[in-house]
Image 1 (cartoon, rainbow, N blue to C red):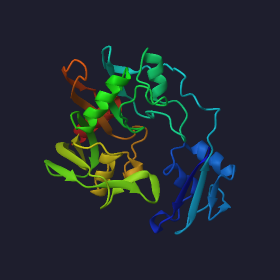
Image 2: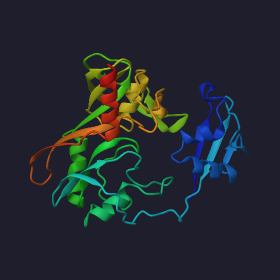
Image 3: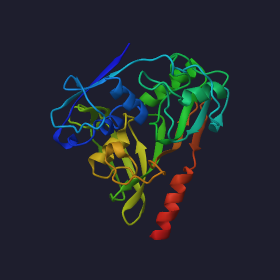
Length: 303
């Protein structure tokens, strides 16, 4: 079954190349986007277009994404050298690296964290056969802590704990500019009508609450700590983009600083929760990625 996506080009999106637009609007890499264009699976106003086509306001872009079987490797164990922070017979907590999608989807069927989980753990929850072990997720370029369930009962209990906001999630990030020492952002979030991969602050969106604290200020950036009261898709990225304080390296949400090859500076640093079986109070922490540490050192040296 194919998936169809449509985008109506706004004035702010005009004058960019078609292939560049696709890169930030569908979850495919450059090669995959170009293959779709060559296969005439990308239409502009119902007609095939070249990858170099310059978009105009009110252009209607239609993308047909075929579901292929050749790249499907959902159940193939792969050694991804996972960094295991905690493990017991019921669950594990891993430190996810950057550039790794959490689980497969219709439009992304290459290597994901799931392949590594199948290699690493003998048993995993399997209520969702495409997402064994997965209880919650992190974006592809977000690093840090993820809880993995080893059976369905543990998975159910953890998901209830997330819904009841009994699991504390602490993130660190570098943002552009400055905010006050501490505060709370309560702005509703919903899907961007022009870009289905992107969320935005909208009046009729779902409640989204982020508590923040400034840890350190540099000449142009701030090191922030975030405590998510809710866990909406792209919550931090959407909130701070709306405030014109995007996360460094987050090109989708407006960062003007792309520190190649250092990437996006958002890290799920700490989890606090009661164990769903033993009721032990767990406080787990993941060290910052090397690129994050190096950038902080460089900023401190320049301060």
